[in-house]
Length: 123
Image (tube, rainbow, N blue to C red; front, side):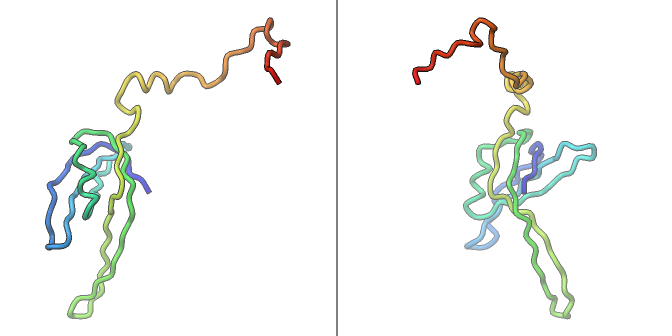
């Protein structure tokens, strides 16, 4: 799955335990009703966020994770998390030259009538 939008927040890395670290990113989607999606990057994936800044347009590849927890009183609860495993800048979203080339027609130019019957291929 993927989430696209603009980076709203990049939190510093948190060392949760001696063997586990995480870093949180908030992406704001560009929809009629924008959503602020918090995505966790864990372990070696934390470093992926180093080259990004607030305001960057990005596409984040994610996995949805769910787990069950049972309290000492026997109550069962469920928790979900969104884990990021890849992030890339959106191409053409903010640069004018890329946007203008993407709007160019995709149809090929017509062949001039003078060349239509010629075949100059060597085979």
